[in-house]
Image (cartoon, rainbow, N blue to C red; front, side):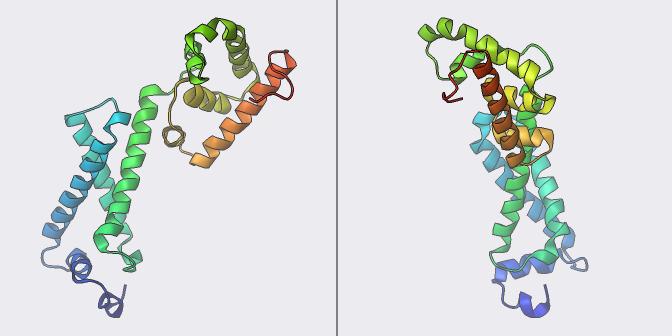
Amino acid sequence: MTSADRATLDSASAGWLGCLEAAAPDRDGCLARLHELMTRVARRELARRSGQLAVAGPELDDLAVQASGDAMLAVLAKLEEFRGESRFTTWVYKFVMFEVSAKVGRHQWQRVAPTSSDVDWDRLPDRMGLGPEEHAVQRDLVRAVSRAVEEDLTEHQRRVFVSVLVDGVPLEAVAQGLGVSRNTVYKALFDARRKVRAALVEHGMLAGGGAA
């Protein structure tokens, strides 16, 4: 951003950019203040999302510090890209939110990522919205689904299917754990459901025109 461009900024945003310059006399103090601000935002956001996490106290605070630290590095690397379309702090908050989402996603995946065995297929009737009185009727269907998942899906599709539909892991967490986009996970889930449905139709467990 040029000096002329900076002149159009609000005073607070211009102040932040000025004190973050490499030659600024109080740059270290400015960095400390920015990090404190970003950490407060990260703590607040993680507190809001605490229901998605099985952690609290020092471990939760450590996630906030990690998120704010990573966000700060990203902000400093992209300072030249700030165009003043919003207040500087608003722009900074977006980096914090992104890092918090990434940390939450990775943490969820590490806690509940499926292994190659011991899938709890008994959860599936509940995920399908079936009541207890229907579980016995659907037992054969669940067995057929598990067989199709094991035999007809690729390893990637299987991990996505089990994570989302059996273990109830959010798509965002699966995407973070696999290092892919949310759309990639959605596509894998769509393909997996299509294959499972085809297997159920083939074995007479589902009518050809039925819903997956």
